Image (cartoon, rainbow, N blue to C red; front, side, top):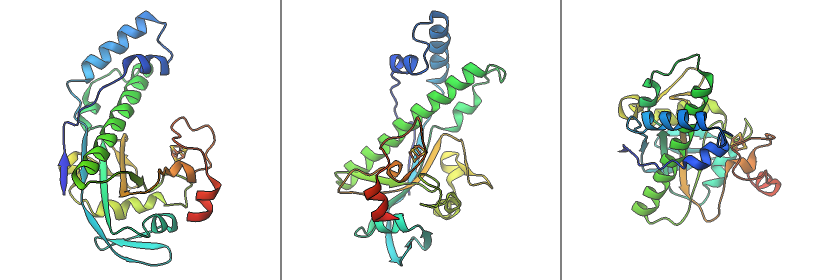
Length: 225
Ligand code: SF4
């Protein structure tokens, strides 16, 4: 089991200002930059992962580290794979301690956006780390609760977190009773080598999702579900 801490991140301020539609508002630009200056020294994005091997498979289950996951899509994606990388990545709890005015909804929304960007950097960093360390060309991932709800139900977070019983101590991430993570800008997944690009968004019918990375793909759906 390995922990990556103080994962580097590089915020594209111009792109963020544009995304938040404040790039033409000098006062907001100044307030946003102040928030970035306040946040940057505090941030400590982290990742926790382990190297695991598939022990058995059935029609719609796959067993890894004595933990059985039920998802036909996951089982099919891991069909020809032996080694996988269960992981948790987080923007870090440190960013929950910035003491922003809770009534300043705008600034709290900006903070959420910044946390999301930092999480993305941390997630990409983990992929690059795995590629380099294990000589992989391409990595795909699946997360419980992403895509349509029955692709890999969010309740399977319990099984995934059972691989990481000390996640709270190691990287400050805990699972709530409703299977959400604290900090909320965290992601848990199983990463695996892949011959082709794959995003769970290809298995998601959600309309107008601002975070969509790939269009819904009927062919992928038919082959995995
Ligand atoms: S489209 Fe949006 S909700 Fe659906 S899997 Fe992709 S990011 Fe998640």
